[in-house]
Image (cartoon, rainbow, N blue to C red; front, side, top):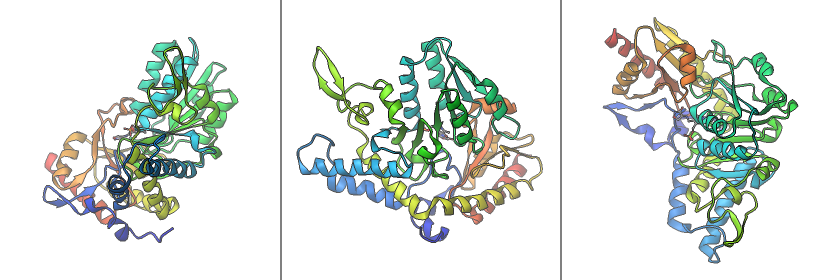
Amino acid sequence: NIAFNVDEIRKDFPILNREVNGYPLVYLDNAATSQTPKQVMDAIVEYYSNYNANIHRGVHSLSQEATDKYEGARKKIQQHFNAEKAHEIIFTSGTTHGINLVASGFASILKKGDEILVSALEHHSNIVPWQMLCEKTGAILKVIPMNQEGELIYEAFEDLLSENTKMVFLNHVSNALGTINPIKKIIDKAHEKGAAVLIDGAQAAPHIKADVQALDVDFYVVSAHKMCGPTGVGVLYGKEEWLNKLPPYQGGGEMIATVSFEKTTYAELPHKFEAGTPNICGGIAFGAAIDYMNAIGFEAISRYEEELLDYATLKLQEIEGMKLYGTSREKTAVISFNIEGLHPYDIGTLVDKMGIAVRTGHHCAQPIMDFYKIPGTVRASFSFYNTKDEIERFIEAVKKAKMMLS
Ligand SMILES: Cc1ncc(COP(=O)(O)O)c(CNc2co[nH]c2=O)c1O
């Protein structure tokens, strides 16, 4: 890994030099989407400049080149997540697509009265597909509760588990609070009851290098745009045994072996789940993003982001009326907060006038806001290319916004 030098790293992100409302941009909305280094942009330009062609089955050289690069990216992603086989990596359009693919597949497995467990910390994209599945199958959705610190209550999870539990799904990291969930413990416990586990890794992927074999997880989903890649592409990792049990998600080209009006047979993994022309460039650029982050190193990224988180937390807590949500000791560099008597939306709008980009609202995690009985929060989420100077500007802007609103 290269020595961690944030000033050198920032040179890879042209957008960080721009101004917003006459101020230098301070981008602290990384949990929504990360910024894109020029190494990833170069991979996109290179694809469309030199080897854009439709993949698989093409007999011409350009198609073979594009296919090799696309399948090469799949292998890179397989190695990154330490999947046993490349065909356990299914390209998707992102986390939401991956979750819907699995939930849809379980419609042919679950029956009335089966139970599926979801955590209270989930993003809507890891709640709604499962509610739709329950509507279809008569399965019962049960919720693993959270505590005031924004952590799952493990004992309650154990109590909810029963012989009827067929699936457990939760995020590796909460997008609204930053809480890192004890997923290995949960996976092992769920497997004791024979339940399959899907982990939503969208928010973990930019901070933690998940090892799917060590976790023994059944499904793990991520989006490229959370980890320096482009939007519109992600992957679903699934254990081969599980992916072979699920029916195809979409019908069309690529996902078939033979088609006749009498009978159609489906392709082997991974193509069974990859109908139609995929986001070829997106998949290749995702591979470039993984190379980029691994060159810096997740250990170095994690250490640096922890420094940023501790510093920002300390400085925010100096502000009178500050209330932080998500105070687990195990968390990534995400801070959700409110200031007594002020609406998060007003704070977010005012700091934007000073060039600071944060997100306000329920963050597609309304059950968490309901738990805390609040309409939403201001969420600042940091990445390895943010600096302490930017945190100081952010804190000053919050203080100024508070003054203007009081
Ligand atoms: C935990 C989690 N799961 C799933 C998703 C959906 O990912 P997508 O399919 O790539 O959209 C998100 C996106 N989270 C956010 C998107 O904008 N602000 C956020 O916090 C997320 O944070």
